[in-house]
Picture (tube, helix red, strand yellow):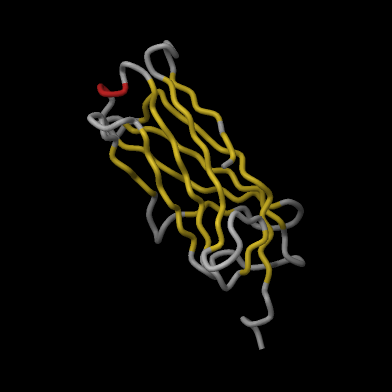
Length: 154
């Protein structure tokens, strides 16, 4: 699993965190960096709050996937359906969180001879009032290539 960066403003002794993510092609090879456009794929994300203040933090996590084209190509911000992914914090839990961000088959199309993309997974925090708070993290993922295996076009 690729490790990322996580920051909490203030004292890192009282509250800090970690984040990591990997890409899997559902029904294909796992983990992967070359994905068939006719198969669903996912980013498996694990993050954790660590420290004595973790039980005092309420609010919502906000997850995003970003694909930055390498060369000519469209930049993509991915959502599940038409919405951002929001996950409630569990202040009474162990501080560990997991989410499988599924991307349906056909979301990314191979253009310009199968443009490669750099994946970045981002995590931000919204407090109970819905305002951004002092926590954020990201994982700079691998380069992904999407290709048509010849079964989607005549």
